[in-house]
Image (cartoon, one colour):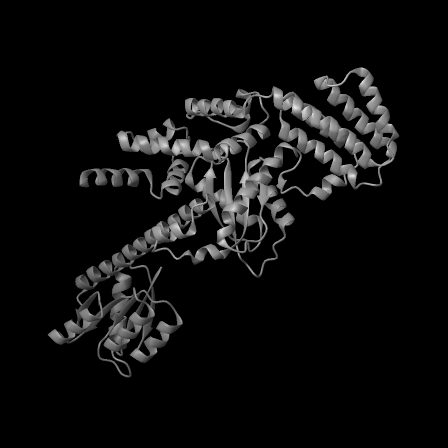
Length: 518
């Protein structure tokens, strides 16, 4: 509700204005003052949208009051009503950007028309300001998106001179959330996405953050600094995961950064967040990253050891050298510093590991295997056992390197599949099945060969295809959305804006305008 301040030293005049406001059903919060001095006090105490003031009043006249009001509220709508109709007054009113002036006695029709015009002015101004703020927020999101993708700060400053880059200093941490299914593209309406954001905010008291939709699988939260909130990483991660699981019945992987010291380190920190989440292929029972290694070192359950052995066996089967080395190292690290485990169990476990390794690749004959097992049972220190197994590991790694497919060839097959099936749902699991590799290994070699992750590659391809269709065809945006593999129009439009800095329709208009001018 807008607020109007009626200022006149004649109570009857104020009553007439109040009567007309009620008669024409203007929904306004009405405040009265009987002189300019009292009105100025009211202006300083609370926000006023419309100033309806007489000219000649004691203490402070209407002209001075309007001047002071304009200093306090640059967008205030001022209406003078006076018994004087002269040229000097009109000039002064116009210089103060008064909306109108009404002569006494007030004519009801003129009053109604003037108030309607004033209220419409306020609404138009609010709408314009909201659009400016929305465009600014969009640009900020676009800048953040480009920044984490390693666009230089100097280049961004030159491209967006109207943006105050100080907002980048508002963030204390970055949180990467990832789903194994295209969750965000499945939210049916824009408000459902906003509701999802609200759920995250409600999970943590006094928690404030901005969001970047990276792709249908990932979202990046940029946590704002708050000196009144104790930022406990483990508690934050647990609450977010619990809130999302409770509302949607799904799990998400969460990777959280250390405290930011400078916006310039955002690209490197984001890269680390993605790398930490890649560990999900080695810690299938966890959703919070980076993994607390002290936990894995202190686990003593033989069942967990069996899981590690199975993972190592699968790595050999799929020629996944990264996973093989990773899990071998996990097993070594677990017992390298754990002095409470029985020596007998340690010898039994690593003898079992030796048998499994040799059986899978047939690198040793039976006699050599038995001799090596005897050596393991004769070791007095774990470092000696580790040395024996590392030697076997090196033999197996050499064999795997000889047998595995060429990474370049594998990546070419994956790229070709993506280009042929970009209209369909594409996931890391699906793509890894096409080349008979584990998701973790495929993700690793894809980044090594292309310099970017698979999800980012898919999004970039779809965005470029959408841009090309906007440029070459007259297809509707909704049809383009479906053609390039998106199911949700609002999500597609938002992703396009964040990628190119303009909505699809706006981009098409700019392209056509440039073509006409060339």
